Image 1: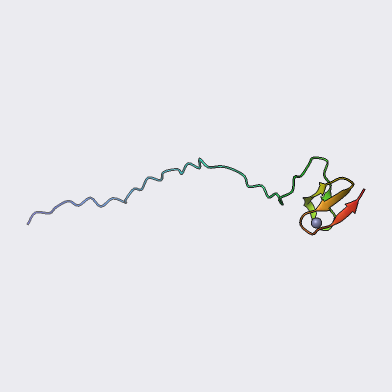
Image 2 (image 1 turned 180 degrees about the horizontal axis):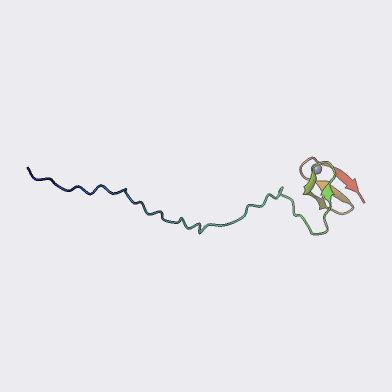
Length: 68
Ligand SMILES: [Zn+2]
């Protein structure tokens, strides 16, 4: 019987780097146009803008209203 040389090397696995082509940030806007000069809602805290109307500021989240 002849000995058959077996080559049992460690299986090499090539890792393919995943390309993340879809890179986009999600912005949470509470439906109301937030302007630069808009104030933050004192109730909801920073991040929630107050919508500006004629003579008042309005929060679309907690319905806080602030008169000018
Ligand atoms: Zn609010």
